[in-house]
Length: 191
Image (spheres, rainbow, N blue to C red):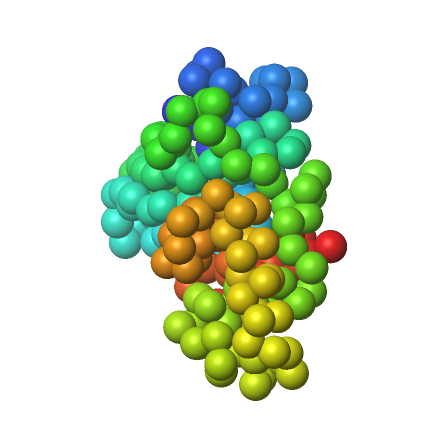
């Protein structure tokens, strides 16, 4: 749990919050909540925070990707609850973070380990849209075997048994932009 001021800067947090983001209080307090979240959260959360500050709701719940330390990410559910000060005016937000994983299974973040070559990124985007091997080969000027080779490498890299799991894990790790179609790999994940 963390307490945010009206500008969404972290004022205070409990020990679980610091443990999940794997950074000390002196580094976190005074920083924006977005500093502990994956860049994809900026596509989702502003409208929720805006609704809270405008008084159009008392709370929200949203799935986002957060940063653990400086080199890992994890999927979490964030609940934001509006805090009202004097005269029922908006004065801040309490954020509850409920991670989907335990601390031992955190996925590598983009900044420390780019996972994909530009070609792999285009193939992964195609797989996420449901394109077949033949369609991808035609679109990317590769042979079918070339596409299958790159898909196989990504399956091993993401430890996924099939294409559906590959796309699911990529979304869970924050590799794709959130809330847009067709899916696009974030530049942070490309070598």
